[in-house]
Length: 294
Image (cartoon, rainbow, N blue to C red; front, side):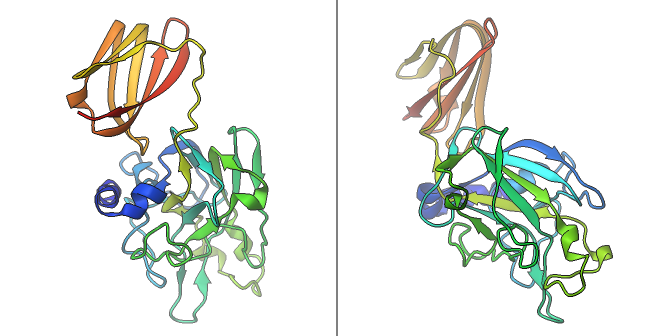
């Protein structure tokens, strides 16, 4: 379902094509306790890629494992863009969607909060300032409006984060750390819930408002030769493998070979493509960008 919705966004949403995308990579996942819905390979990680659930609303949360993954009590997940960075633009730069909802019985928001940290290298992380009482600066406190474009904040719901708040002009990693037990300690807490109701942060999706795929940096000075012929790409490599990704970071083709790897243009989608070339002989990686007009 997530992949189907992503295709619909690609086909019909100009705002998606020109303004944003969604996370497509999980760098690490340390599950917590109590809840494990959506963690099995049958669903994960595709259930957190693509847009948030279209069925989610302010009072009706999404709960299906094919649409979201529970991090669990104390769990932690780090995600990002496979072949790009997230830039600091105007307003919020990314939006995290959980399955928070407003209870009809008393109007209270059921929230399972998490601390959000970001990094430019995957090693050194900076946490967004947050308030444990109001949950400001945390993820998991705002319901999702699945009928609104997930880039139209705040109408789309979810919790938005501005890189200006942590003094960064770009990031490569987003870390989400469940701390939902903080709403179970004090019964006077605005978001208080009995401990038996809280099972941990549930990640639905993360929309990226300012993705930048032009910032891919070659990791070696020696660039392998790639010929752009009318009907194919020819990669000259001693011995290795070539992976080809589309603009959304989805693998669309791969080939392994020695000396020469030929990739027919007809086997690749039209548009912007990213070639990741792994040389087995020297254990080096090189990234190149091309446009396929076939």
